[in-house]
Image (cartoon, rainbow, N blue to C red; front, side, top):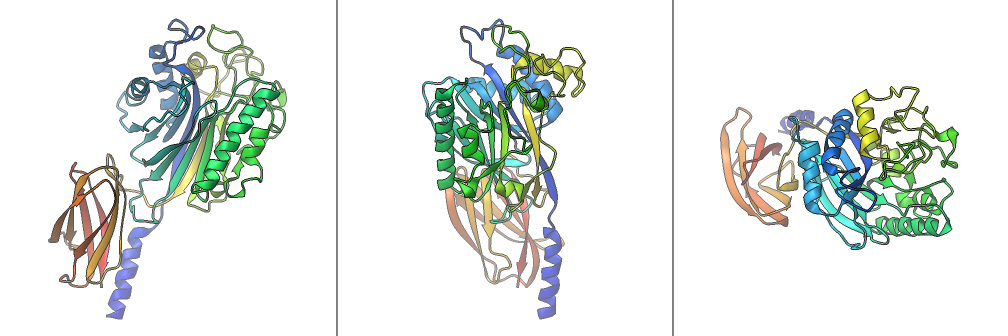
Length: 427
């Protein structure tokens, strides 16, 4: 019996071999997408025209996580972007996070869109609302084995710090950064974090940058992937990393002056830098899309020719925003192969192996029903039971004492028809 159990455990373990997947992250200031102001008008910044540019850029980068600044706080505009720029031309893998607004003065919102084939949204909150909201989105990876402890979480903290130079604005940026870091430090700090957005920083010596990357909050210390401190403003030494402005002359909406500022960032937490929570930054993957380092104080499409991206992408970058998007990749060390698309359940765990009683916990985003079927390895159904699952956490049991010892397949089917399978060892 001991030899049989050992063989079954080894056989079961072969199903749990880890595989590495790669997620692409894209952060972009969309320049008043869906907002019409005295300077960004329907004539020079119509979001209906911007849709095709965003689609071109997203189709080129193919992000799994797409975070944005300067999108309208009107949720219908945010939904419009999803369907007019992301889920088109045969693509249907993007979902949108919900929208929370605590700062009612700013019309410039943040948003997260994500590849629901690979990721699900586990939570969303606001870290601080001084000047503008800083959003915290909690994503989980859709592992082929979503048992407790067998999937990973990635927090995306999206910030748009106070703009403009001068000591007063530096202080306001620092206050926003400090508020954000205090929030993270008191809410699950020991996890995978990406901190991204338009930070409007001019130098690495600014207090806000030091708050993010310094030692005051060691559990959530962030790292700059390029590790290039200095005075980024109007400094040709940093021309490869500058992200504003794509325009040398203004169209009335876009800032002029050419590429001379590094405002856009994706910072990584220590857990991602050192791969302590199964998510690791892919070395050398961070860059500003469309930045070739040869257009300091010039438009990105001026002479000499910018060949860092295809010409249609370069045209889209120039016309859509005065910022360049920034991107990086992270490797996820998790089993893959069974995506849970449109699932109401974002975490399910159960005891394994089991003796007589199968105990399982469900964390659901809504009310659903769950049918649990047990199959032998030759495909014969040997047991079935149905459960009503409420929103939130619940615990369920299933008596499997009558089953012979061995390896089985569990199939879970939700009320929406979505199903997924797990292995079960009965001893």
